[in-house]
Amino acid sequence: METTEMILNIVQKLPEEKRQEVLDFADFLEKRLAGPSEFRDPEGLWANLNVHITDDDISEARKEMWRDFPREEAV
Image: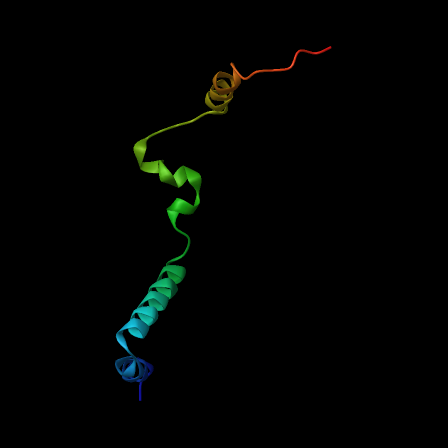
């Protein structure tokens, strides 16, 4: 008997909730075989949007963000 047939025979005997677990696990294995997703890399999130953020952009954003942050005066 082929592995696929063996799996099918076992799955058919399972209750519906357990079949869903098998499906979820099979989906997990399939995704793992596909390799890393482009979304694991933060730049992959905006790769198709033609957005280019430079170190200077980040530095400027930090300055703006912390500009009004209260500081204790040095004694």
